[in-house]
Amino acid sequence: MAEGPAPVILAPMEGLVDPPMRDVLTRIGGIDRCVSEFIRVTDTALNLATVERFIPEMHRGWKTAAGVEVRPQLLGSDPHWLAVNAAQLAQWGAPAVDLNFGCPAKTVNRHGGGASLLREPEVLAQIVSSVRAATPAHIPVTAKMRLGYSDTSLTLDCARALAESGAAELAVHARTKMEGYKPPAHWEWIARIHEAVDVPVIANGEVWNLEDYLRIRELSGCAAVMIGRGLVVLPDLARQIRRHHQGAPLEPMNWETLQPWLADFFWQTRARMVDRHSPGRMKQWLSLLTRSYPQAQQLFDELRRATSPDPISRRLENSPRAA
Image (cartoon, rainbow, N blue to C red; front, side):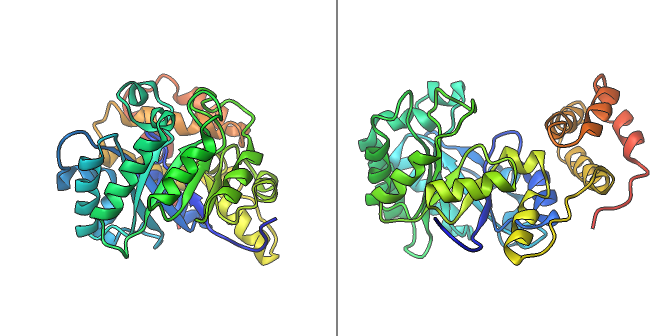
């Protein structure tokens, strides 16, 4: 079993872990690194405005306000254009380039991206080799994968293809594309990948609390753990993990203490998007928070029919400022 403190990484999740969510969660504390939502690459070079929209932290040295590194993630299937855009990100100062081979979304997989590539280990190798060759040696190229598309018959082949073609580390979501987010995650498979490759492996999937974190490390043998929905549902989970390693009391965040962070998230969200979209993001987070906070259900029900930001603004306007 991996022992001692190690990185807790905030997972990339499209439409959920965006810049405001990264800002709030990293300021709450305990997160050591973030990976951005995927930036889709087709047959053209990305422009600066696109990257700025996904990762405004690039103008802060690729770090959140709390000083936590944000690594950009690219999604696509064309080795040439992924390489072109990885090189551009490096020129703009990106601390690393991550490649997405794990997204289960139908729209992504229908166009040959994300987890659909796990059916073709040789294509994975071509992509990583091309990106590695185009990117300065001091910039790590990393990859995120699932266990496969519909089964695990090619799991180890895919992992080896990524590692042997230049990926500096692998984050492994312990489910197939077809399993989506349905429990359970197969943490024992991460251990098999960990043993099969000579690069660091990051364990990911179905970590909701401190007990899950300790268990995934035990079963996978990995030190680092990537957490997505678990950190959105329990915003102080990473802080609890850090305090556990420090031997300090966990001091879980209560609903009252969370209120300023909810307000901060909403103000940032409202500043980033047109008014008709901001209520949906707030309701999305509240719906997820009901898993940890019964009070979130009451607030969600209260705001369920809001189609403009005004009712939410009125509800949150007296919240104290987040630290």
